[in-house]
Amino acid sequence: MSAPNLLDVQGLRVSFAGKEVVRGIDFSVAAGEKLALVGESGSGKTVTALSLLGLVQGAQTSGQAVFRGVQNKVQGDAQADLLALPERDLRAVRGRDIAMIFQEPMTALNPLFSVGDQIAEVLQLKEGLSPAQAHQAAVGLLADTGIPEPERRSHSFPHQLSGGQRQRAMIAMALACQPRLLLADEPTTALDVSLRGQILDLLSALQKKNGMAVLLITHDLNLVRRFADRIAVMENGLIVEQGPVADVFANPQHPYTRKLMDSRPERDVTEVPADASVAPVMQGRNLRVSYPVPIAGFKGWFKKGEFVAVQSASFSLAKGRTLGVIGESGSGKSTLALAVLGLHPSQGELQLVGKSWRREAANDKALRRAVQVVFQDPFSSLSPRMTIEEIVGEGLRVHQPDLSVGQRYQRVIHALADVGMTEAQFPLLLQRYPHEFSGGQRQRVAIARALMVEPDILVLDEPTSALDVTVQKQVLELLQRLQRERGLSYLLITHDVDVIRAMAHDVLVMQGGEILESGTVDKVLQSPQHPYTRLLVTQTA
Image (cartoon, rainbow, N blue to C red):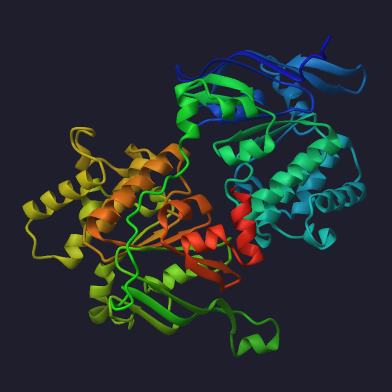
């Protein structure tokens, strides 16, 4: 007879003001098992996990969530229905028996306390350790998660750590009391591809060492394939399919599961030959970009130091082609984009459609039209106070002020139709505001705004990293179509090898401000020469 499950969830329903977002789901997690709960934004997966610990404010929950790992110091291990526990008892379960790793450690960690103090606080409250004992235990936990110099880093505040180090500190805090079940909500989404692999390996090692179960919340299928034992697929508040990872990936039964599996970006670009006789639309030679930094001590009173973010970068982009720039956070790829956009001064040679930035309004206005940008997060890059008509038509008011109101209106309508948004689909489209649209729809609006002034070059700064996999595929297909139809040239900034493989003709690999490797996408991704490039490619294989 098999041992009972660590967690049995039956008929879980979660609603807000009468609207049901989780609609009677059943699933279980065995002791020591890794279950992945997969779905797009709005599917209900995060609400499901948070409701188990009573962390969803204003929600009405029903059903059962029997947890058989409550550590009762008097009676030994016991079981309890988490949904029926009073707040006082549930507070005791949180952190001690069931812990949680949140998606974004910068917002989950308290900015006013060092990471060591935050971990020590958990140990003092849950385990009754003295301050000195708790501090030593916190340092040991940071060491277990692979943070270098754990004693020194324990005194660091969250903003003083890198993204990967902050996530490791969150993991150390979650594992402080050796919980039986760990809820991991998109624990690697905010990290670079190389850091994702490190965090996954760390979680696997700690899971085996502590014998705990893991409920992983994610939309990253590569992560699921690599990490989980079983998978449960959620759509619109329902679990539509579940089973062993190998079985579901080999033979998905539900249409939604098949849709997720088919969401990997596909290459559909015109293989435009690079013609050496035709001048490139963008060219950089020995480009150098630096930032001033303060100098400690007396010397800092009189001069600033210098941080070189991009060093000796040389590259070119031909008309109708895509140059992909890939690297982890801090590699210099976004700084390179800022220099191309004329938003940060640079040294060396940089020419765009035969011109250079002079940081003079009269000279640079034409270049501002020729080079447009689509940012990573459309919610923050679109003004919440402007209507869609005002947002998309803004460039025309600057670069073609002689157009009449009627002409501008027609151009806006045409641009939105080009990106797949019409009044027939969205009544009163032009009078709406950005918050009334989904992430993918907002990104289409951002693309329409960039295309409105008919640019030659489009800088795409992580244009799909904030989107679900199915929406990401749709946006990439849109960009591919627009490039074929308009002969656009793209500078694509990303950390996603799959996006590079689908979109780019040529690629630059950056680390520490330097270009480590460059060439055609086939050459670089199929036969990577630098160890760092090989690491990036193998992490997404």
